[in-house]
Amino acid sequence: MNSLFIVLPILTVLMFDLGLTLELKDFVLVIKRKKAMLAGMIGQLIFLPLIAWAVAKLMNLSPLMTIGLVLVASCPGGSSSNVFSMLAKGDVALSVSLTAVSSIVTLFTLPLIMQFATASVGEATGISLPIGNLLVQNLLTMLLPIVLGIVLRRFRPSIAQKTDKLLSRLAFPALMFLAAVFFVQHRETISANFSSLGFACTALLLCAVALALLLCLLFRLDQREKRTIIIEVGMQNAAQAIAVASSPFVFNDGRIAIPAIVYALMMNVVLLLYVGGIKMLRK
Image (cartoon, rainbow, N blue to C red; front, side, top):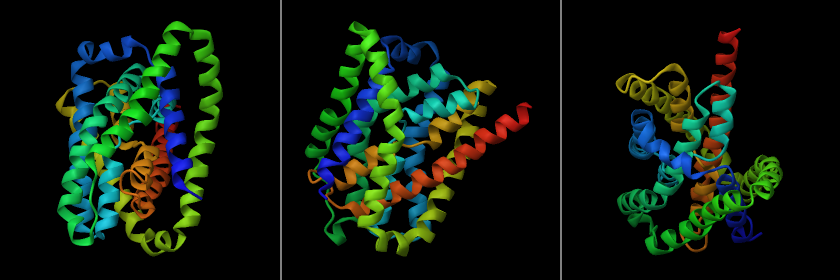
């Protein structure tokens, strides 16, 4: 089954659905809530990829798995983080704005980070990054769908609401289907690397939580903002990472997507436990 006809359409639809939930005011929050936005962006776009690189090096992961772990750490956000923030009684408006801004900024930070990662570990194994192709793919499968979603919500809000209601229901099953396809295609590689990757992804997640807590203390954020920053820094856009890894126009190697699949599994487990713990404490 050609991944081109699975991954890219799913990512494009998810980004379009994200755009359906956004308004221009969500981007204005960057100015109004500077401290909280800055804390989230620093954690998402700078420190998490660095931590992923350090974890991969400490655990002596293979070049492919190292690139994959840095890749998923460089793809922040996704609309699911907004749902988790709501469940955790966090600052949903902050979550939506961080998701919106990080999805745009990542279009340009991702190529830079991955160029460094591939140049550092990929040359010896013949792995290279066609950076121009990655930029074009990001613009077509992420920026364009987000903009179309925003435009539809602005001029046809009733249609946008109905469309979002349908697509939001399909998002999780689509991701599960995507993960299942890659699991079947690469089950031997996943089995061989699951223990080390499971440990690496868990370590990355725990470091993300610790980092988010530290940033919240440094920026003196309130409790609701703190919960949101923890979720935003820890939750990654696995679909974007899988698309970049498996796309024939970029890495064209599904094995690089394996860390994203494992991270998505561990991410949901850890963050669901976090949300559950908050709900228990509030009783």
